[in-house]
Amino acid sequence: MTAPTPPNAADCDPTSLAWMTGFPPAPDKAVTFADGSFRKFPQLRWAWSNIRQLVPTIDVWRGSGPASALPRDVQDLGKVKATTMDGRAITFGDALDLTYADGVVVLHRGRLVFERYSGALQPHKQHIAMSVTKSFTGTLAGMLVAEGKIDPAAPVTKYVPELAKSGFGDATVNQVMDMITGIKYTEVYTDPDSDVWAMRRANGMAPPLPGVPQLSLLEYLTTMPKLGAHGEVFTYRTVNTDVLAWIMRRASGQSLSELLSTRIWQPMGAEEDAHYTVDRLGIESGGGGLNTTTRDLARFGEVMRNRGQFNGRQIVPTSVVDDIARGADPKKFAPAGYATLPGWSYRNQWWVSHNEDGVYMARGIHGQSIYVNPRSEVVIARYASHHAAGNVNNDPVTLPAFAAVARALKG
Picture 1 (tube, one colour):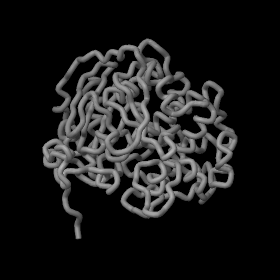
Picture 2: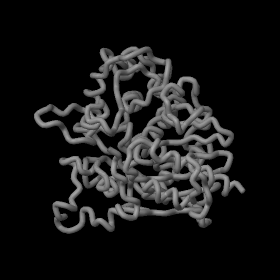
Picture 3: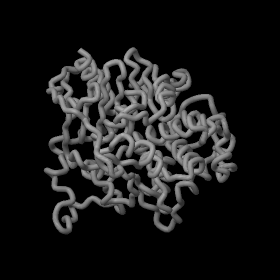
């Protein structure tokens, strides 16, 4: 039996469907955390732009200074032509509709040339970044390495001794940063028995099981068994990023929200506060809990495109950005089997293409992304609420569309 075809973006628009309207919302229009409806489609089209109404969060303060300028030079990029990986002729505008885009900002040489919002998202509203969060975590970790606060060759247990008896007990910081640890952990979003669901319960993004004590995120990480040797192949496991976040807290003496606020959000002149989801102890989820506006997501992409410089300041050390952009070993990445990412690698929580444009990306489930194209001087920030979690479902449309926009702007 074939799965039913999901509705198109227009037919499942959360505003048109009136999710969470009324005081209180009617039972058939309610989207809640406790019953898990916030993760169901099409309800998630409302939820991803309204996380603060569903789970506890902590602020990332933008500071008291002015927002950095994004000079506008708006162009009709919606008509840019592209060809999908399976040979269909589309436009950039089509690509956004086909992949349930909620917010898109395109920057060219620092100028805002395209901006569009759909669904429940607005320019001033935050949207959950999912695993794009990881790239913020990795960049901050790289900054702490550059400052000598973290030794990438050191064992994880130097900073988080609680992990000594776990599968991370003999892993190094660098292996965690590049996700080349041998940990027994599965991340299959459609399988309720997959380990990712236990992690979600621990980080506060899934309801606890009835009658089962709720672990904190660190408590959950200590239960991770070892599966194979560390350092051999890339395997995507969010628990690596959460271990990295704990290393950062211990090394810096600051929370993730404090680190992001003081090291990036305030210096780059963010337009709005961001926020993280938190576990039962109020600790941020470094692997997927960040929520930002689309413009501020683009600002961070512009920081990276400019090798760490933005808003008149060197925010991220050039060496940190260059190390990410160089990527890691594609041979260690290949066994992971990402059909839409041939020849790529994973370096310090970023996805690196190794193509002629030097493209690298932050990526999150349901279509979240930052696309950095240094050669074309283009940044594309995109928030979405695709019905399918895995990006293999939207890459065949999104990646060619991003590349077509970059070519058009490069001229």
